[in-house]
Image (tube, rainbow, N blue to C red; front, side, top):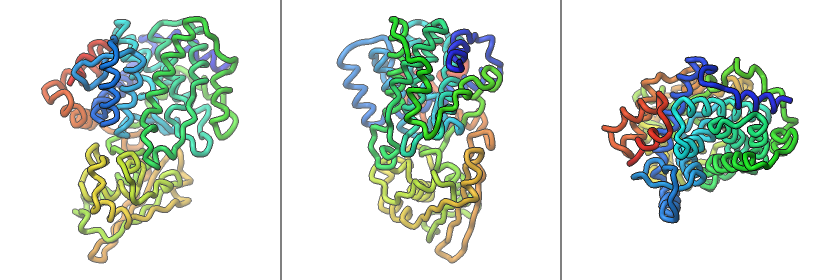
Length: 442
């Protein structure tokens, strides 16, 4: 059975089994994810929850981006994953149509910190959990209409990663994965487009439920036969492709097919923002020069057409706002998608952005998710630029230096510029969880 093969792969994976280039990619994803968690730790709702939990009881797991506040591993996994989601800068995977890393790393850091695991153990478990998360996603993608991918398949990857970190056997690992599939959330994509910030905690709940699933399996709870597919069946749009769970397992490493993000908005906006950035630089344009903007793209991106978002989350899922904010602020980072960025100037420009789905771009999905942006200037000129696929993936990868720059921008305001080198180096090794979490103190 494919799910049993996958569990066996997880339980027997050793550090020596991971090719050097895959290990290097894994450590880069870990570093990027740590940076994104720190960048999101100051979100008001995340900060409020952190204060509540830190004051209620002690624990052995660090809440990243604080002065060393600790809580239980369960709560740390939840709140750190939530912090890593709020900025919409977390690493993703186009064939999973979601974000594997943020469903895996927070739980590993929380569990590994309290159990004194090594850096090699962390990396091995992280790669194992990532591979499981993506393959489970590939089994059920596309999801049913209206389902948000966060919180659906990620918990199975969490459970696999934690099971590997605890060196559980294949049978117990399989039960943990099956149990975690039972905890898949019935998430709604409308939460993002309507600005309901419960969406930011979908990955947090997956991290929490994945850890609990491992605890249950260790205690003797068992999972449903063929449980990964059967529990997720109702969330998929069609029959689960069980063969995806073991296809080229150990030969094709899914972590190498992921993408990184530098625009602090939904990935569906990224090809559009790349095109806007190119035009603005080449034509020396800013918001005052723009009369109207026309965007042609694929259907999922074109559906993000709200011109007047009411909060930061809604803004991150609005192509018109993303275009307008990029032109007004000259940037697409963290500060361009906050509540303070929802200015009348930006919203007025967003109302002059028209978004259309075309067959040209629809036909290329999922291999390429592109866009064409045409800007009409107040002087009567028209300039256009097309992007076949957003930067950050295999079509146009970022360099390590690019990601280090992103890391600095997110981390420096939290832990200080003088501490960046140490944390980056520790994440790239990667160091033991206790070392990593200690270096994230504000």
